[in-house]
Length: 596
Image (cartoon, rainbow, N blue to C red; front, top):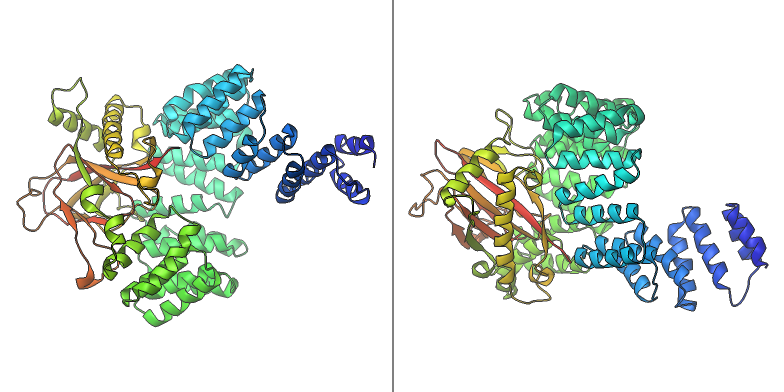
């Protein structure tokens, strides 16, 4: 084998010939350059797993070679193998701006944003180009859920690369997240002549029109999206949501049905269609759809599982559990399937069996909030002390007074101004959301704390003070699903408002996408008070959604008051008692995620 021949093939992008040449001309030991070309040729042919395997082998034989480490870590980053990529970079000392930038990207992926900033400082000191610097800062701020900080960095990138379509698109997306919908829409429309064949652009323009209340234009652009990409599920679901909230319930599946008539069956489309029918409570139609899907996709476990779920909803218990167990046996590491069988086992007092089903899943999904929630039920009903360890209600549920910003007279004044501001983001006259725990009320759209309203940002500052205080109070416990991630650094991953009206309530639920959760109470009717024996409007903890009768337990109930924040682990079961009142009960809940 001659190095020049192999190098020439690689330079001329003859990647398959490179691999053939290496295979025919074996060398022992194989030079570093051959390992590199072999790995990069596999990568160029989109054989990423094979490329990682080859470069890993090469680095094991040449553990201090910087080029092998950089190329391998780039591919690991591409596959979101962040821990592997960091280990690869750490084993080789590389003083180069691109290596420091690469490490910053890996640390960002691991949500270790403070360390990512330090690595980016190293890259800057070593002479990284300004465009890469600003783009990576944008990524870090986005990981921290701070679009307000990401926007100026992205604008600096645009100043350096002003005609870049992707950067302009990201700029418009950030404007939309920040509540500047009119400006965002104008920027999206300026991109439209160049990108009108992109389903994603049509979709986001439709969503921006929805934000602005332009519902005819919303439908128009979502339908354009589906004309380009018939299986674009978010567009189907948004159309259905829009039509449902407008009271057009007979039309809410029209786009699904049209695609089914005009295109080959698609499992993801059918799964979404069934999910929409389930949340709408249309169980007979859901069962028909599931049976149709099982006919077309007989080996697909998801439709076996969904048919089991529907049978449970309509009271066909025996058929339900047989199907749920079949799906769980086909995919033993699927948490959804195992959790649903565990629910059946809990109902039938089979607590040990449910635990044996759920505990192994923590090896794969250690932060799945539902697994912890259902394990907590088992432990309580078994009298296992791990229930108290997990759900120490007095320790982990904490109430706080909302801190008052300096420019407000008192808490009542601040809460009243905040309530009036948040009230603007509730759309009157719409059906309640299809897929939320809200019963009898409305829920706002989007991430409210992204909005650059000075009152909302003053509230954010107050909320962050409370979260910091809560995290400082947590014990050290490397095994506990809440405590083990407490670095005291966090991001507010979601924030919304719920406006419950007369007889409204939240069904019992957990926050599956959270880590720490809690509402701020903005408006509490006078019928909700601490001396009420019926606890109208109170939030209750411990009672599940399983309807276990006398096996249910309300471990703690909190009477809300305006200006109060209640924080608790996201896996904790909670709901509210209905209330009777002429005025609404308004809250501002949030989900919080750890950083680092």
